[in-house]
Amino acid sequence: MSIARVQTFSFSGIEALPVEVQVQIAPGLPVFLIVGLADKAVGESRERVRAALTAMGLALPPKRILVNLAPADLLKEGSHFDLPIALGVLTAMDILPAEDMLRFAALGELSLDGRLAPVAGILPAAIAAGARGLGLICPEQQGAEASWAGDIGVLAPADLLALINHFKGDFPLAAPTHGPVERIEGGPDLADVRGMAAARRAVEIAAAGGHNVLMVGPPGGGKSMLAARIPGLLPDLTPREALEVSMVHSVAGLLNEGRLVTRPPFREPHHSASMAAIAGGGNRAKPGEISLAHRGILFLDEFPEFPRAALEALRQPLESGRTTVARAAAHVTYPARFQLIAAMNPCRCGYLFDPARACGRAPRCGEDYQGKISGPLMDRIDIVIEMNPVTPAELLHAPIGESTATVAARVTAARALQTTRYNETISNNAEAPGDAIDLMADAKIFVEHAAEKLHLSARGFTRILRVARSIADLDHAPLVRRADIAEALAYRHRPPGRNPLTQPPIKLVTTRDAS
Image 1: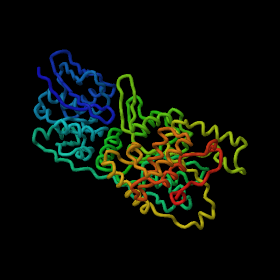
Image 2 (image 1 turned 90 degrees about the vertical axis):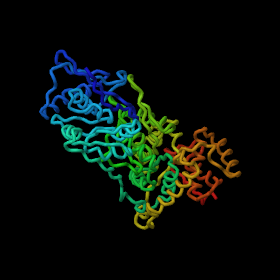
Image 3 (image 1 turned 90 degrees about the horizontal axis):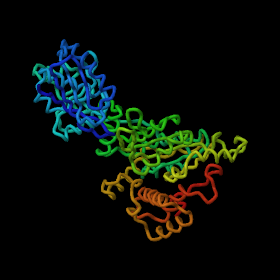
């Protein structure tokens, strides 16, 4: 009794872990068993395999069929085990050549009529197969996605019968071509934003360095409108970043038509989202919004309305750039290097600064509303933008501001300086360590005195330096100047005893004002 072997993968985060499907057909009572720590979806695959073979006119032999998924102590989840199990059974029945099966890994879900349905994780599986010197067999719709893995042999049949005919030499399958590159064109233009010069300046700095932003202002003040225009300011992803982001989206099953993601993602979950939806997890661990926003933007509108647990779950990923879902069976880690853009009203009614419209609980309502955001989370926000309402006169008569293309050109130039400075080991200033930022002599003295007087934490001090470095990059300054530090402090610091949510906004300092 020989054992048929087919290679496939299980997933831990975006890492594809090799799994060997071993099939043995032996004399005994007719039974079809699957062992090896398989979940319910994998256990049900025996019925899908049986139905698919019946649809092709084949029947399982009336013997004991045992399928082992090795290693046996690794949890196997997902319907993508259907195809390798079916191939193992067909190999054990001498319908497929065993030597050919050893040259491929396989993933795919089987329909009852033998067609192959798309599954999640094809791109990381193809990359892992290539690293092991294997080709990949996957559903027809995902052949383009698998081809992005490089020079590996990819077979993408429409159904199980087409794959059998290929290995028999009757109807060879053509190699799939690369999938298209995802392009997002025609987003909202920054020129549509009238007035709000200070907010526009702060958004440009945030885009240049990848800094976290909190916008505070009354309802209808333009917070969401401004946030929607930030993605257009960001440069395209580098090839390495595009591969990282595409692998996350592949594991989540969101890589449509094999399109490689080349633009920074923009995710905006509703404030009713659970902690698992934001941070990742669930019965079957899936990437959350913070991972789907990897190398892009996570926009949280109505910031204090999110569940407290979901907001606190942001703290560690904002520092480490990854999130770990801890379960009894395993720990799953996903990348989560995102830029947080948050927006909120100054209080629940939203009109704290307007005596004619504020509720009778002011200013207590603002203090209670602010209390929903913890100090450690606020300490991780680099730029606070206090937005004044735009008057009707400004909407009618204010000149048209700079377009997205104009501002994006400056942001791209600043990012290019950062790539040169950090030799691509760090993506932007938001990730830079404090000792990698060079200051002029008077700037060092100024920031030292400011940090002592304002009682900045070590994290806050480093984030001030990072924002100042981005301001200097926009001006192509080789060293951080005193004026850059002053502007960075204006975006972060509030005078002692002043609550930014319960007192009117102050004018933000610009580089020109500080100098």
